[in-house]
Picture 1 (cartoon, helix red, strand yellow):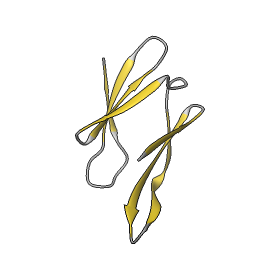
Picture 2 (tube, helix red, strand yellow):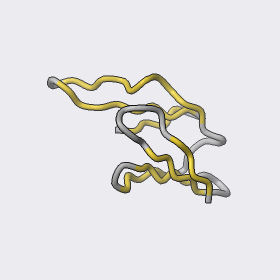
Picture 3 (spheres, one colour):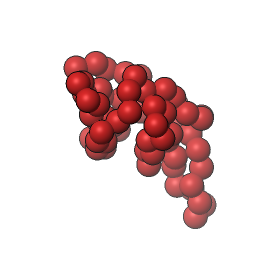
Picture 4 (tube, one colour):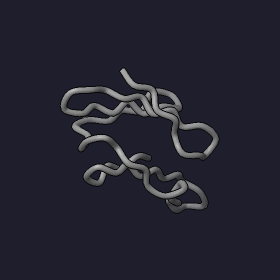
Amino acid sequence: MCVAVKKKLQLYYWKDRDFHELQGDFGAPDIPKSMAWCGNSICVGFKRDYYLFRVRCLTLPSIVFW
C-alpha cells in the first residue's frame, strides 16, 4: 500500500494480519494529485508531471520520469 503525506510517499506491506512500513519515507518532487498501482510500480500524478516508481523486492523504489 502506498500513502501520500504532503511531499512524502510511504510504503506499507501486509504481514501477519498487520501493516508494516517498508524502509521509511521517500521524498516526492511535489504533492501527489493521483496514484495508481501498475504491477510492481506506482504511477504518481503531480500538477505537471507523471512519475513511475518501480518497487523491487521490498526496497525503496527507483524512479522513472515521464
